[in-house]
Length: 431
Image (cartoon, rainbow, N blue to C red):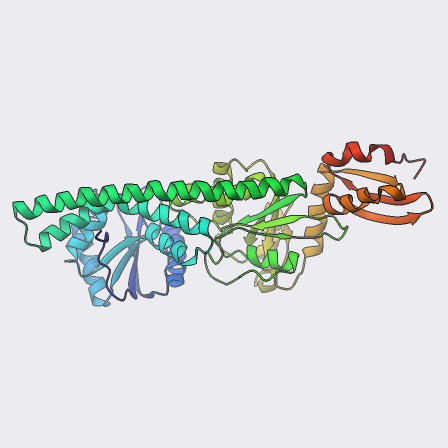
C-alpha cells in the first residue's frame, strides 16, 4: 500500500503558521503558536520561521486566499523549509492543495499530525501502541484519495492509468478499513484484560486517585515524589502517555493507589481523545483527582479550562478535585501566586521537585478519604489478628496498641469491612 504522503528523507526545517479566524484573536493565535513550537520541538524539527495570518473568512480551497498562500510558500522556500506546519486543522483537500501549490517540494501538515507523530514516538504499552495506530489509520483514510490523485498525475495520466489508480485506491481503502477493524478488535481484548485487572484491584478496596492536568505541568514528577518512584519525568510535552499506577502510603498509614494519566493539550485531535478514553478512564473510576497546573505558565487559565473540558467529556467533572499549582520553586513573580490564590482559594501551592507543600497535599488527600471511610475505634481479639492485617491492607490504621484483651486500633474502615468489624467497634465511653 502506498503511503498517504511521500515524506522527504529528512524533515528538519519547519515553518509554523497560525491563522487567526474571524471568531478568534491574535493573542490566542500567538499563544497556540507558541505551544505548537513546543510540540514541533519535541519532534526534533528545526523551526526556521513563524508567521501569523488574520483572515476575514476561511477559504475552502486553502483556508487562506490563494495570493497569501503563494506568499507564504515563497517565504518557506526562502528559509529553505522542508515542511509547513499549520496550527489550524486542515482538511485532506486543503493539505493536498497546499502541496500542489508548493509543487510537491514542501510537505504540509497540521497540529493534529504533529501530535499523532509524538504519540506514535512515545507509546510503549500494547494498549497505547494500538490506540495510536487506530488514530493514525482513521486520520489517513480520507487522505488516500488525494495521494492517489497525485501519484496518477506523476505517471502522466491516461485513462488506463487512472482506472488502475482508482482500482488500487479501492484496494488500499479496503485494506485500511480491514486494519482499523483488526486494531479495534485487538484493542477491545487489551481493554478487557485491563478491566479484569482493575476489578481484581477493586476487590481490595484501596482508595484511588488520578493525577490529571495539562501536559508538562509536572504530573509524573509529583507521582514520583509522592510514591518514591522513578517514572520518566522529562521536561517535554507528552513525556508520559501510558497510565502508571503506584501505591502511596499516606502519613496515617492509609494506603492509596495513585495513577498518572496522559497530559491534555489544547486542540487535541478528537480521534485521539476517543482513542485514549480507555487510558483516561482511570480518572473516571478513581475516588478523587489531583489537578496539576504549572504556576509559571502564562496560559494557566486556558490549561485549566482544557483539562476540565476533557474531564467533563469523560463524565468525571463532578469528582472531588484537589487543584495544585506546581513548580513554586521556579516562581519568578510572587504577585502571580497571590493572584492565583485569590482566584483559586482552595488550591495548594507545591513543588514536586523540592517537596515544598506536599505535607498540605497529603493532609488534603487524607481528609477526602476520611470523608468516604468510616473512622472507628476498635478492640480486636488476639485470635482475630487476621482482621488487623486486613485493615492494614484495605483501610487506614492511625493508631495501634497491643493490650491484654486484644489489639486496640483507631483508623478508617472501608464499607466492605464494616460487617466483619462491627462486633469489635468501641463506643466513646469504652475507648
